[in-house]
Image (tube, rainbow, N blue to C red; front, side, top):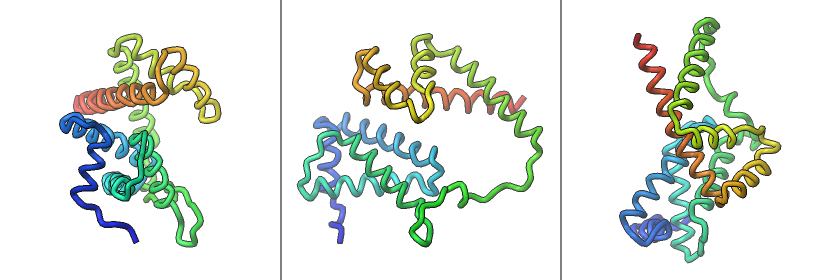
Length: 192
């Protein structure tokens, strides 16, 4: 049976993020947004609830006296495990969340192609609006397929003289900025 989440364990969780209360709150919000996006990108049914559950589990571990050195990485791993739990089928077999989603009625492929073209046009526009070093970084970060991705990102971090988690954070912030820009661009152009 899991220990109840108490204000003390949650306070310990925040303290593990940063000893300064304001910075801890900022880091908490940043980490929360990142984990929500993690669940959203993978098609999890309840991203906010899953993120809260990840934080609750980590806070409970801290409450049990377990020392966690990389709290962000640990939260990410707990989130990954929660995601895997949500994708288990009734018989305990994993099934893709894609099979759990409702498929829309037959779409007009012309509209889908036009929307895809609009999003691509907005992405190119938003990439051009970034400083060139930021645009180069985000393109380089996502260049390789999964198989070579880890090695590539490690080499990229070394070349930029960054820790891999710092590189991932930087790429995440750029991706967030691009997503916001593309969404705004699509809304603006769709309204015309």
